[in-house]
Figure (cartoon, rainbow, N blue to C red):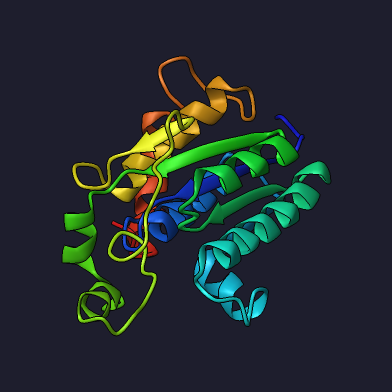
Length: 203
C-alpha cells in the first residue's frame, strides 16, 4: 500500500455532487485499507475556518488557498486529504497543485441546469431572485478545469460509480494498489461495498 499522503481536490458548481461523491470515496478508500484520511468540505470550512470571508473573488481565492495549505500539511504528513470546494478560479487551483504536488484534481462536471434542478439548499432560487450576490454560475463565473485528472458525470452515473472512477485513477497514478487487473474489487468485495453504501443511504 502506498503510504505517501496526497490530496484529492473536488471542484464543481454548488449542487454538482462534490460532497456526496467525496463521502462515498472516503468509504471506498477505507475499505481498501487507507487509514489516515481527512475530508474538508466547503460548507464546514466556511463555518469554522474561514468565517468572515466574503464571496468576492479575492476572498474566495483566500479560502481556497487556505484549504490548499491545510491539505499540503496533511499530505506531507502521510494523510490523504479530500477537499470538496466549489473553488471557481483556475489560478487558485493551479497554485494549490504546485504547493501540494501530490494533487489529484476531480472536476464534478455537472451542468448548471442540472445543479439548479437539484438545488438541495435552495441557493439557486435565491440567487435568481437576487437574494444572494456573487453566486457561482449565476452572477459570478466558474472557470472549469482545462485538463482535470478526473472528470465526473453525475447525471448518468451514480455516486459509487463516480467514486470508482477516482479509485481507478488513484491506482493508475500509483497511490493505491489495484487488487486485480480487471478492477479494484472482486465481485464479492463489490457486493460488500454496495451493501455498505446502501446501509449508509448513498444508493
